[in-house]
Image 1 (cartoon, rainbow, N blue to C red):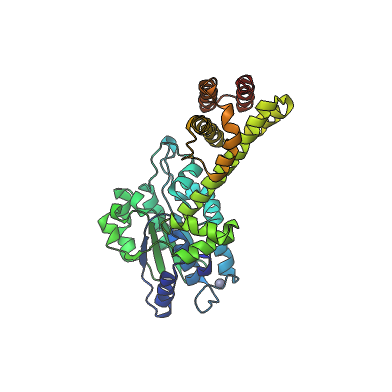
Image 2: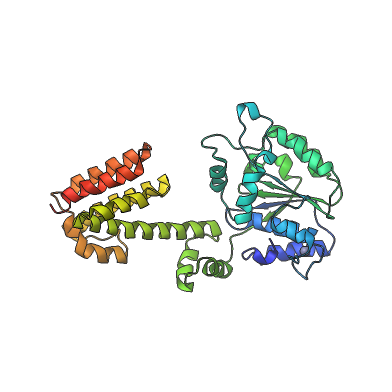
Length: 373
Ligand SMILES: [Zn+2]
């Protein structure tokens, strides 16, 4: 990750580069701010820059042996600490136990949420923390001499999740680490970090990404128009993550809309072969997406019933409204309740881990019976 790959945040980038050039790199920084604004990206880019063997004016080179290892996050002088779960027999677990889940996620994008991580861990409802065992591992790694680089860097993601025992054990090394060791703490909730840790770090407040670079990033990464990107930027609080969620939501909505139309057409035409194919395809989605689709169907049935009754289209998009102009008459007082019951039943069965392909086929056959009423 080079500075140029970090979206916006020019002021902080130059502040960090300047600190290096003036030979006043602190031994520990605390990047803090809301999720999705690039704190982790800045930390990795800074670490790569410090370690680069052939620095450009304001960035790492991206091609030296150190940079190549950094691009894959496998440089031996780069260490990560992050919250994780422990299991009964595994209470000696540390971040290293989960590094093979961590590295691919961060490599894919340093813009990730806490939820992205806990999903990866499949932690379900278990508490994710940085446990006491981590302190030994931190001290050991920091005490070893650097392997290849002038700098040894330890990135601690979400220090607010570090338990007190672990924090107390690393206070000393955080205050006086060996020469050329840099701690980069990356926090979403600065106020939850133990004061003893906070006071040993130099805070860097990271603000939301400015509109223009965020817009450019969205246009580049998602191939949307500048106008569309502007709309998303407006409601994203300068957070790339929020923007991404917004776009994914739009995408999901679009997908659900198209499939709702297909399903209704199949049911109306009583095309059995294609209906079975449809059920098969929908069943390949994740269960969350299947539920999202059924939920969308429920909303569409409700809205079309309302549209049919009083032309109220407050909750429909322009495209949905165009579709409803013709479709709404199929949802009426004779079948609206049955529609809801059929879809609710399907939702319930999907939630209970029933066989999706059978459930969606059944649902379609049930709709066939009532759609012409
Ligand atoms: Zn380099």
